[in-house]
Image (cartoon, rainbow, N blue to C red; front, side, top):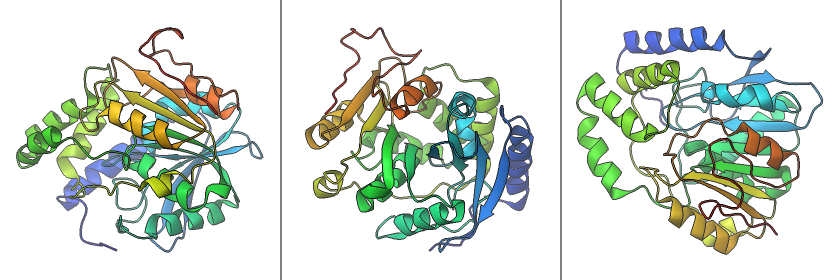
Length: 302
């Protein structure tokens, strides 16, 4: 477990946390927060929605935090008990500890989060790194995951070499380089100015983890017997979405795919598709996707 500083300066950490608190105050639905002890550090959770409703755990991407779900939580919390979690070692209010990517650390962490919430099983939804974390737990303990939503997930295909070759030198250029990386990750899809500002602040002050997420093996992915919704953008600068789709389609018997032609790696406004899927209908509906019969969207269910 890595415990070295995750911010470039104390002032930078203060700037990130101040903006976190400001944006959390504008969380669009009533909420409570909790700090749960885990084997891999205290974990901060934002809880919304009716107590006793079916639970869903939301896991954000790298260099981000639970506020990444701001545009989805209002609709999700109407019928679900929503737990938006700050992953440890990322720029949220969880511990700065960085569990190793190799081994059982993230499964142990999720076990402790569920125990702290008093939840035996739940649906999981994850973006990018959060998708990888959801996959790690779902492949290790599939009996505890009712449904799985993956948005531009890591762990299925490797990061594009073109992105790494572009992002590495930009990461050395301070704020200007961080903002450039943020633009590449966002792609051409419109993003709210407040979200852009926050992403730029994070890219400026936060030390992202280095190295590549390990891909899950075919044997691991074949353990996913629950229904799975995959949402990816054709313009994703980090992962080749066609390869992600093809690999999961070859391994998962209960997969629904939403392929969004205009979207990049940052996906938002997908609560409609998530609600439909989590309500057990298994259909893909999205304001950002083309009409149901377009060739740009592919769906398969078992």
